[in-house]
Length: 501
Image 1 (cartoon, one colour):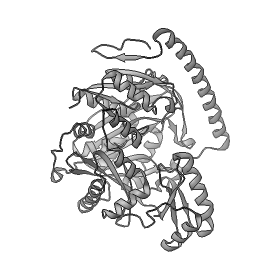
Image 2 (spheres, helix red, strand yellow):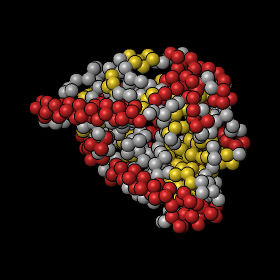
Image 3 (cartoon, rainbow, N blue to C red):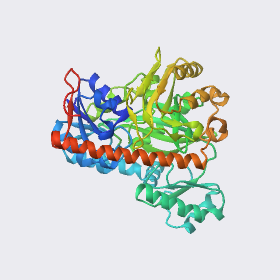
Image 4 (cartoon, helix red, strand yellow):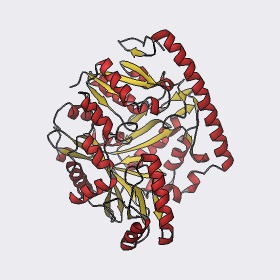
């Protein structure tokens, strides 16, 4: 096992990985931007190194800075968490080239599954069901029209190089295809630096069900059942649960076997997720996330495992000792993502200082948080503050437990989406498990969209805050250069952090 791991991330996932390191006796090294000087992951780590100003492009996305810290700290491996550099093949390659271990799949695997058309080709060859459509990027609207007329409308245009809803357009008829194709291509180019798109049949209101997989260096791949992730807003998940209310033991085995074939097709190492769309008893490959997922805790709770520990062990060369037949889900788990967003104002982001935090407790309750009282929530990063996860013997009991915990969870100083989650727990379709990716569109009373004035006000506030942060950054850099020459590291040795702040 490794003696030291650098965690190339921030927030709740960095805290999660650092805690796993501590339980395994591994020295955890954190990196942080100037905006995160007093962040929880910095306080929890054994060592923490400043790597740049608040913008992620100048800090958490700086491969050179992260590798410099790895060398300086003596880290043997790098855990990327999720987001930022986690699914960037060049980063995985740079870590390997530096003589370090990347806790995740190879750059070749990341590249293969990051290219959506290449992934579809490989999945089709491996016998994994894919949504009817093309397996090559489409170069022009005329070609897209030919394919659309062949498979039938509605169709979905999707960016070849990305996800998260960027470069995606639903097309209902031929007259809309050219305009939608050009818009999707422009958006894909802006978001991913690659304007290529592909086309597939559009499934109306499917469920989003994903399978957790883990592979070791011997080629063994296991699956840890499914997660239901259908409650989404603009392709971003809000609530997840395991197991899915509609997946039987037989279907779980079938989907799990398909996910294992998908992982084996790309020589998968470590933790990954194969995502499927499910409609009318059929499932189709959507994409593979070559990293740990935000919603991994629900799988951990129903299977009684530590996925982060398993990641570290297989990265260190250990074989998976578990057997597929032994992996049986127990009970039910639900996760609510708690963000600094106001659902009743169209999920507008909120900023400010967290004045007070009280997490719920009791049996079957887990709070994976990335904040503490006094932390400043800004605009530079994802608004995820933490995740509230519960486990209970049944889905009905888990819903009741989550409702109780959401009443107990208190975060003051910034607006959050807690009221939204409380409303969902009381909603009849959710309680009955009647879900699809159109859940929010079908329940507009749960959210509201902001008017133009609110958007303009929010943009003005954001601009002012960023300007103030820039002034503060200049002041901090000036002081830092005078005191330390521009580099800062905090170290933990069984006592509070010391050093330059």
